[in-house]
Length: 311
Image 1 (cartoon, rainbow, N blue to C red):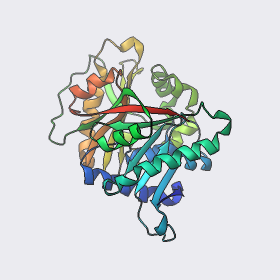
Image 2 (cartoon, rainbow, N blue to C red):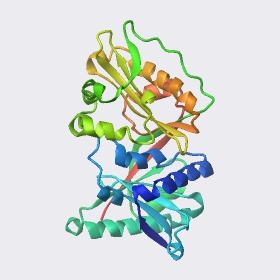
Image 3 (tube, rainbow, N blue to C red):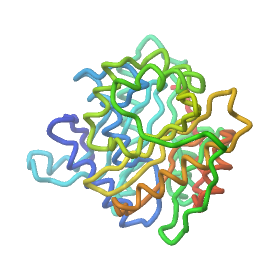
Image 4 (cartoon, rainbow, N blue to C red):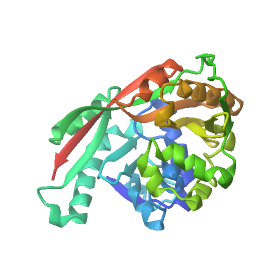
């Protein structure tokens, strides 16, 4: 039987990261969660400010008979989004427990939201390389809402394309809080929720994360010093997994190919860290950046479908 264990960022982060890396090594496929997503739950600058209560959105799953043993191994990790959308990674050796896990989560959500009976919407995801989960969700009467996102992996053997910056532009990394105002202006022009949620204090807090490396947080700058575009790679030093997480151009510079230049520069800088994997996760199928990812060598595309059920 499965047992849900509470997650503590301070105590469990490394164990969870090691588990997620082990799943990737075992399956050789990027599924639903990467280690950086767990750390970003605390340090992400565009979400709400972190509190200890946010730890409740992450759960560790172990076998019930071994829960008393603090050294018993994780067999699954779940991450609950704000829309009751779950990203769940389960070790390949324990896929036969997945049905039980989904049923437990349904019960938990019903107990949390008794007033929403008959209106409670729960969301899960499947990737094309995981037919077992598709079958399980069908048996549990979830509805397939169709293709929703892509996960991308950049093969190690891929070369980095050459790029040419428009005349007068340069690429540099962000230099702490001195650059905050210009940075939030360009990011907010593309991602309004970042403008609403980010603050200089949260931006400083993000830079305390292990995944944050100043030389991988890049901006394209005009000759007049204006920030025209941005790109961020995050690198987890424990698992050596890198993620291209932010990429955008201020609307008035969309006619210039600044995104390609930023991604290529970031990939070049990333080589010194010798990542095990470079990826993009949860990219909406309609995101125009998908063309940039594919043009810069992210050629292993994993389609992800969304499934929903009303409880």
